[in-house]
Length: 444
Image 1: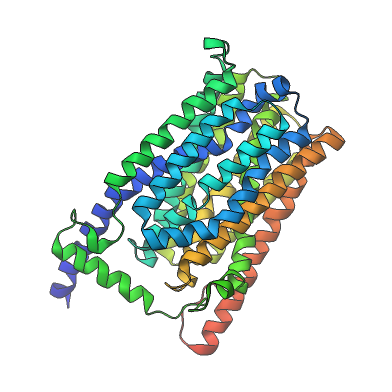
Image 2: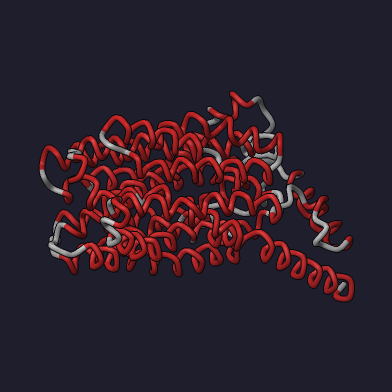
């Protein structure tokens, strides 16, 4: 038994190591640039709001309208990726969003802000769920929390590194007659176009086409991935329409909203919250990066812990509870040191749960429903991001308080934490009723 299993173990480790080294760092770089282009509006606001005379409500709507078009185009985009292949489609997404992100420098008022942000959401729609779908083509289920956690660490890293970079670019004010926020949009858009072109040479659509793996590695990986498709899934084969409105898909959308929508609200308003304590742009950028540095470390460790234990539900719920309690503390403590600690807790919670949540999602969707289901989960959670950014602007307008504007984020992350516990318990009961000795999803 040992002599036949050991070579297979070595083959597994070697194959997955080569796959990870080939595609994960590159996709992380792509997502890093994607997220910088999505949320750099938060730093542009430090100059842009005053230059263009934008009220908090107008800014909130302009920031949030991105998620409306993102929602509308996400499912069609992911279905197109499945049809034409990830290599071509991800390249298309990145090149078009880079061009439109650059056009943000030409915004002159509310109307052009709304139009450009709407187009940016439409251009970027499908990138994240497309990559999540793409990773299911390459990694077995039991590796996905750590791989997705590693991929999505690009989000906090983008804010950790992007915050001081964006703040520094604001300092180019007046160069060639452009304001600092205009230079920021132009400079940070160029890498998206370059990486989009690089996709054509780096990415391979499926393991069967991977000439950079040897024959034995390709055969093992294809067989291992095929075995995943034979397992019974809560969301079995069905039409695209039924998949979109499957109860599991809808609940997982709520769960992810507690991470994605809360993250969107914080990232677009957080620089203004920190600067409200009388800091300079560079001081704001440096302090803004601290929570994301911590989150980058914790989310990789937490995703690996979920994979090693095989437990998903509590690994998804506990970080959401941390976010809810952390942000709620802002209602009590109102000082710069306190707000930095509060933001650290909230941001760590937001990102630590991403790997386990997406691992649950990919494990519960069958192969035929994965493209539509993953896109719908991400689309609805991003649509909630429109609500959080816009509502935060309305509350800030009405109360002149950033603290009160955080209340919707507290509620959403709390609801998401409860939702994953409830659906996890329900799924455990279903599995137990069908297979008496099935491994529970939620520990007793």
